[in-house]
Image 1 (spheres, one colour):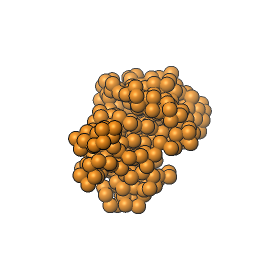
Image 2 (cartoon, rainbow, N blue to C red):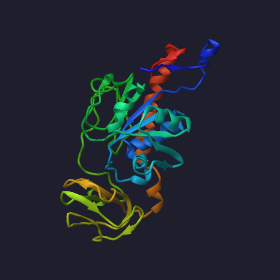
Image 3 (cartoon, rainbow, N blue to C red):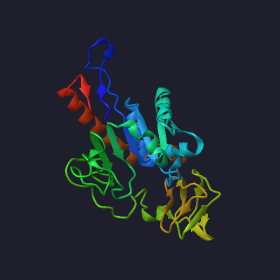
Image 4 (tube, rainbow, N blue to C red):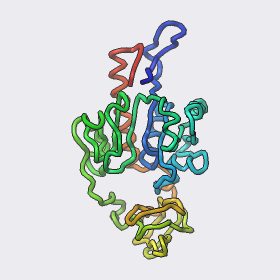
Length: 294
């Protein structure tokens, strides 16, 4: 694993007050993962690499860095990310003060990256392969992980009193299958695939819809809004989907500006990840100020 060095090694001393610069790997580049990366970046932890699928399934694409895999570049609240396919391109993004986004299929080209911190932000509600020995500190979001077994820390993702709680032993609350409530609406604000096939739509994030409006189609089956509001999220047109997959969400508050900013839930979760990273780094820094392995 890469060591986190403080100060100027060429001068032969280390500065305990110099900023930390861990290599952070974020698995996933959808809404929550992007909020995490944004929060870490804003805290001046700038060596961030994100991994996502060739064809991401995120719906809140206007606040998700995974769109860089389509267009080459993405911006979330002023923070830029660019796609990369090699370790050299990842390091080039860092030099340009950008986050690097890598397809999971290209991981073999950059696996010598040796992250100091791994954050599993896939939110699959199960562990898809993350291990505690993937890095000196491994953080996982939501249910499907056990802190102390699969990872070092689990972050609670369920809305409510414990949202953002850092769990160092045990698991997050189990998945209820019910979306969080916004303005009195929960399950009915989510658009889901009625069948298998490609999702087709001429709608865009930010569009206003009314109850019973047809938002798109899957294999000829209509996808209709159950409530009125603004389309806060919508999966990319042409994406292959399976029955029940989340295709989008409607915000009944009707505020278009919310489509382009990180949500309250995502900010809370991202703040907890930042705290977990700094807990570990500052604890190790107190033990060994010259050389850190966060």
